[in-house]
Amino acid sequence: MLTLHNYFRSSTSTRLRCALNLKGIRYSYRSYALLKDETRGEDFLRLNPAGLVPVLELDDGTVLSQSLAIIEYIDETYPTPPLLPPDALGRARVRSLAYMIACEVHPLNNLRVLKHLSSEYGQDDTGKATWFRHWIDQSFPAIEARLRYENQTGLYCHGESPSLADCCLYAQVWNNSRFDVVMDDYPTIARIYEALDRLPAFRDAAPPNQPDAF
Amino acid sequence: MLTLHNYFRSSTSTRLRCALNLKGIRYSYRSYALLKDETRGEDFLRLNPAGLVPVLELDDGTVLSQSLAIIEYIDETYPTPPLLPPDALGRARVRSLAYMIACEVHPLNNLRVLKHLSSEYGQDDTGKATWFRHWIDQSFPAIEARLRYENQTGLYCHGESPSLADCCLYAQVWNNSRFDVVMDDYPTIARIYEALDRLPAFRDAAPPNQPDAF
Image (cartoon, rainbow over all chains, first blue to last red; front, top):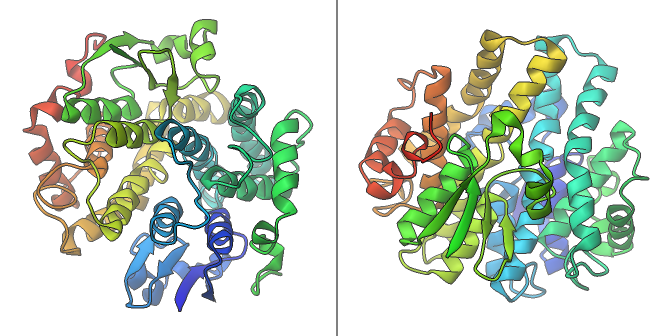
């Protein structure tokens, strides 16, 4: 069986759990407490020298890292249901929406950056939340505009079935709730999030529903 | 002809120029001065509401954004030479190396973040360079370790032909030189960068060789 090395509250882990659940792939869950720097331990660094979750370990011991690379891999090797559309332009759209979150929002707002703001720039919880919301304010209006005005948007980010972009969106919006982001200005994103949250694959991947949640 | 909306010093633009050049795709070059906030103007925001370069405009006016999504698109529609390996595990490796830069390094070190550190956290050029190098120190050792010890590494990041990962690596290492990053601890990365820099496709994509360079 596959082993998922991850942490309940890690947004990149949540993305990957959504994808695994959508594909109906069973996996063994292994948790690393980020707050205790458990991904900086020797055992984990042997798996992934970057010291970052998630990591997916295949049956033969092959180790895959970087959530989006893993999702593309499982989409290629477990094709049903597909997480990318059949046409190249559709795939470009889904990937670009995914990367608007994965390359513009999440990297600035994850735990290691917030820790660094605290240790090096003296930011307390209020200061860290201000930073977090600043980057949401910088990026969510454009995501909302695309989802609202582009006619490929459906019940989900792209048409009527969940995609790579939805995995990223769901994880990020869940994360936003921890920093009191007001979603009123993002009604399309909020509507898609609610639709995703009704799917067992997403709901079961949410942080509070993981074995290491507290 | 395709139109590339970009800026000479933008690292994500450099990535995409490398890929376009590797494919031998001709394009019309349109520049937006980031320092003058030209991507925040109405004309550009109509192309991309995120206000970020690069954007690739196709012949029929279709607009693609997010450098990695565009590179995957051109790799699918102009298959030769391929920028991803033929096997799923190889593709996962190349993508994961690319995302180690695109999702862990570059988002923290681009112009808008450095500007924000200056305006909101009072960081001068020295402070901004310290921040830049901190995130290189956090991420480059793992990239170096993977490239040094994984046996799929060849003349380039993955075997003997340049890939998506090399486009990201080349652009990032070029960018590092602006912030006095010492590359002595990263001999494998430096070796691959030098090999890439000997290829006209990469050299021609480098910031100093663009029409808007100053």
